[in-house]
Image 1 (tube, rainbow, N blue to C red):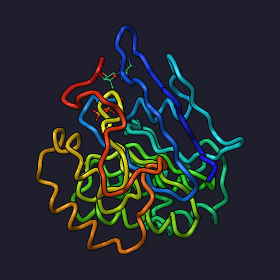
Image 2: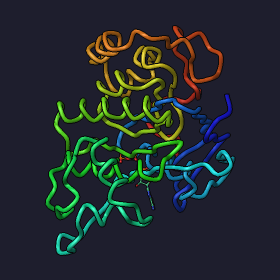
Image 3: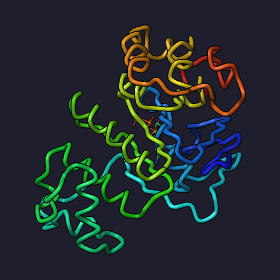
Length: 262
Ligand SMILES: Nc1ncnc2c1ncn2[C@@H]1O[C@H](COP(=O)(O)OP(=O)(O)OP(=O)(O)O)[C@@H](O)[C@H]1O
């Protein structure tokens, strides 16, 4: 299947520091792919490079022609003194009708918040409004950088269920960065474990068994694995699009994952 976004041998530098090196990446229509990794491992940098907001030092990134991306960045500061309602926020930067705006709020589980000041929302409501705004562009791919930050565990689980529904209803691919390992393992088709390079990648089952993953996140992933097995009974035979045996974890890069290669 044709990739929506792909990267080959992608490296990104910030000044002298190599933040990412040798990254190969693909995402297909309708896939949910999650990038995990420690703080500073280059997750946001990878997302930004895939969108085209960050320049590749070497390698290349390609996007399907005319690809429509719905992007929720990691940080969005809104000045609390700004008199901005949710409704007006949804029309930034592209104007949408009241009907479209309310439909998006209903879909993301926050109906009727349109007239409220955006800075008065709870963390969970705000994340849902950000998702609503991203959906209003009718994206072929949703890119969400830590969309559940600030949410409690039930809120996080509910948000991932919503993402899954959106994927089912719209067929959009979803690329996420997350720290919620347990839910990530339950809600992703494919997981990429990043630490300056790709340490391991594949289905949640493959990644949670990989020594590189365990070196980074410890062995307390049995619960995640059980949750994943419990919630998913559909086919996960494909593995990272590389034709590997899905039951055999692999490092996509031969280096240790204990530290970045920078
Ligand atoms: N604009 C920048 N200028 C210089 N260094 C940067 C810049 N942006 C990121 N970095 C550095 O690049 C490295 C990777 O940052 P990045 O934000 O991609 O990591 P991350 O995995 O998303 O981290 P976190 O989990 O903390 O959000 C870090 O060492 C960071 O300090």
